[in-house]
Image (cartoon, rainbow, N blue to C red; front, side, top):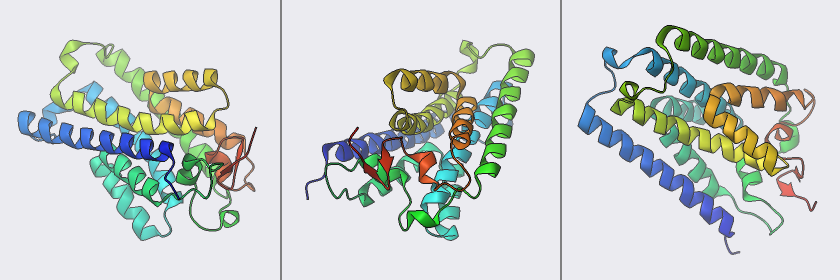
Length: 242
């Protein structure tokens, strides 16, 4: 069967973003040295790293759901922590190559988001924990940003844009792009999609946590987990006609 054009497009997009991030890391290491230097940890760099890793936690939760065993989950999570969005892109590209739509009515993103296997066996048994964890993370990130603004001023200063801060921001926004793809796929209107993506760009993981908590409150703990991941027109990875 021919591979749908959208599937090829998403593979190309995330492969290109992964290559961009690897190139950025190599270039920044070559021109600015190791990132493991105390002088790099300015207040806003610290806040940006916290913001970055809260998003990594959200992506890791999806990876853990997707993987069939804890060993592969642990390996991918460690890679996410160490290599950030380069790993995000590699994981998504790998999963996109495993996607095999059975027909034109199947959306490749549905199959990407879903876990392989019997969907009915994966319940939202941890939905309450998810609500609590991401609520705490969102509040924590909001507190970090507020504290940093009060103690170090606004982040829109030229002196803050060091080579490693620029690399961290690229890393951060590639992950934001991946999360935005999910948000755009899940939202039912372009207006709500644009609003949420703008909030993701402006407020980062605060918006990520807020969006996840909202989605978790829209399902019962007895509902299958794919109700959180898919849009309202999707079921069992098959997109139904509106």
